[in-house]
Structure formats: C-alpha cells, structure tokens
Amino acid sequence: MKNVRRLCSQLAGGLLALSAVALPAAAAAPASAADDCAEVHVIVVRGTGEPGTYGWIVGDGLVRKIRAQVPGAKATALDYPASIGRDSVPAGITELVSTVRARAAACPDEELVLSGYSQGAQVVNGALGVDLAGTPNGPVPVPAVVPAELSSHIAAIALFGDPLRIVGRSVPEPYASRTVSFCQPKDLVCDPAPDSRFLPHLAYLVNGDLGRAARFVADRV
Image 1: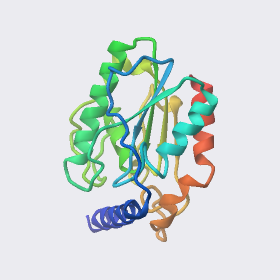
Image 2: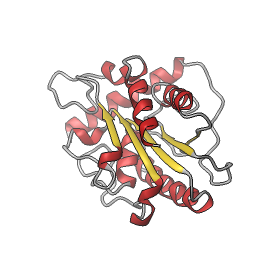
Image 3: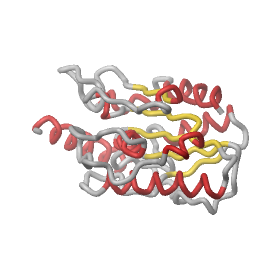
C-alpha cells in the first residue's frame, strides 16, 4: 500500500507540474458517435493530469503519426477526469465502454484503435475486463466491460507506461494479439525494478515508441 501511495503521489506530482508549464491547447471534442464515421477511429485515453489535446506526452504525437500512415483516420480524446481522485479510473472505464458501444452502433464498419498512457492504460485494461486489483485507485470489480460481441470492432490497442505490468497482468484474448505495450526501462509506473523513478515515464514523447506504435496500428487496420 505504501508503494501504491508513493506511485500515485509521484505520478500526480510530476504530470501536474508538467501541465503547469505546458502550453495550453484547444480541448478535444468529447468521445461521441455523432462524429462522422471513418474507416479508422482512434480513442485516446490520457494519463494523470496530462496536458494537450489528446495528451502531450503520448496522444498528440501518436495521433499525428497514425494519421500519417493511415490517411483519413479520425481521433477522439476520452472525456474523463484523468485525476488522482478515486472516481477517475472507474469513470474512464464506464465512458470508454459507452464510447465503444456507441461507435460500433453508429459506425458498424469503423475499425477502432484504443490507446492509453499511464492511468489511461489502466482504463483501457479495465474496459477490456482485466482485474485492476493492486493498481492505484483500481476499482474492484470494474464497473463495465466491452461486450464480447463488440470485440471485433477493436482492431488495435497501444499502451504506454501500463501500471498493469507491475502486477503481471495484461489484456486477455482476443485482444492480446492486437495489443502492443511499451514500458520505458526504470519507468516506476510499469517497471518493477527497485531503482525505477518518474523521469523515464515521460520518455515516450521522444524515445521512438510513438512511431513504433503507429506502424503496429497501420499493419492491423
């Protein structure tokens, strides 16, 4: 429990400090099936306190790189608190499941890509039915799960700094073969190494993983 509290405190402090100095960005439209349908639609789930339209550390760059490789791809930032509050993760899971349901109903031929960074990866895992016990503010049980009959709508999943790696869990089949997960060495959120720290958790912006994730997505849509 002390380690979980330490992780929450360091993660929140680091990202909230980053958000205080980042340039303001226009707010992304909330997830909605009212958007025009597309062949590929990326749903991005930000990390705790992460600034930016889709997330300054991961989402903004990832969306640009996916659009460069998948012309016409659209993107939505999930509308959830992305805070250290206990309601943030369950609210994100509920919203993500609702969004997948709505988009599948409104756009049955659309291929969905789910991306989550840090707490966002936790939200994606929970929405796919992964047990979140032992992770920061992870609800047990999760409040909602993407129905099995909608799994075929999800073409690819990209996770960064995933807290579930600390407890040795990952997305189940049929999603495992569609998932790529990046963990920077010594990232305290996803790497259980005793000398892990916060700074590597910010490295996804510059370490090449965004390009690798975009190529993974392009190969699967």
